[in-house]
Image (tube, rainbow, N blue to C red):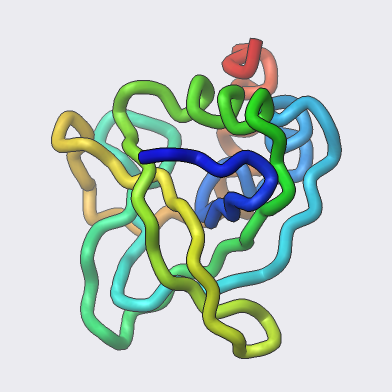
Length: 139
């Protein structure tokens, strides 16, 4: 998929919703606009501390945020952080004001399996974030 640098928008639904993680990964503060993705569920990846998206029902919604105006080097940092277990995929999201937008999302490859256990940002921040912050996965 060709990335268009600053024109590209990204839908974050997991650890990148945390401002400290986003700052460390991207290298600066990132403005996040609330957004929602319909037809998917956010669940914990098997044996991992992070979530993956899995298809859901039309009534399922994943709350997240859209980041835009990222440079090519910042996008490269995102791709490195997400690693080989994900691929970028264009998707439609709904922004806070109700407008529809296109964004890129990191969707799991088949190597990641879903647990079915819902993943919650606040719970992750409490239980896992301190350890993740020491891992320096954004270097």
